[in-house]
Image 1 (cartoon, rainbow, N blue to C red):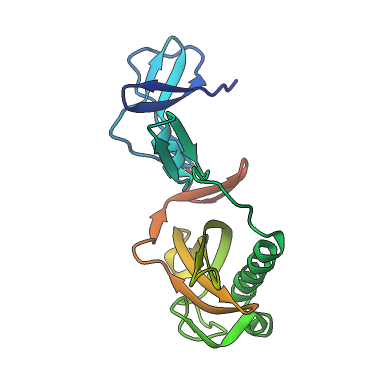
Image 2 (cartoon, rainbow, N blue to C red; image 1 turned 180 degrees about the vertical axis):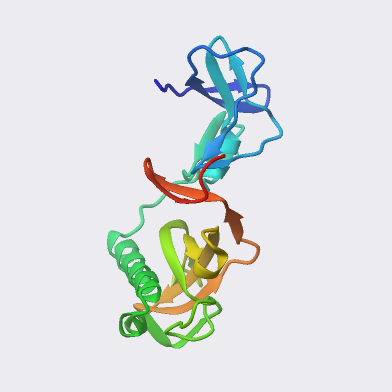
Length: 218
């Protein structure tokens, strides 16, 4: 399907436009992000062969942050409207790689590698014990990515928030999405916590086209 994207304003409704080919004007299109249908209060519409969908529904489906600047009439999707200073590459890469190693070591049950990233006062509610055992705490991480960065205590500490996607063995292919926050400073991770109310379940998850997990579409 040939795809073109436009961003337009119609009152307070922001939309993305996709070429839809020939469809019945009365058909109500569905929005699927990562293989899961996205519900929205503003229904998508087909107008002259193009599908108009609320950009908020699509962006939030991807876990993107949105900010509207009424003064400049600009929409920021996963962008900082107050960009002033550039983050140090060494700080960003060092902390990111540290957390990435911890997540991968946790998933692979490699306590030695995980412990190398952890401070003596490390605390977590992600697992009860490490290495995990049995099936009730075992999980297979399918995907993870950074979704948040925040400097705390006048820049002396950093909080990185990750979105993790994994398939709990005891849930028979149900996909669980959960955000984890990490407090990092002194070249070590001091805490790894589940972000409250961030857990949700999906029927399926698409990493890239033709790489899918979960229940097939019906």
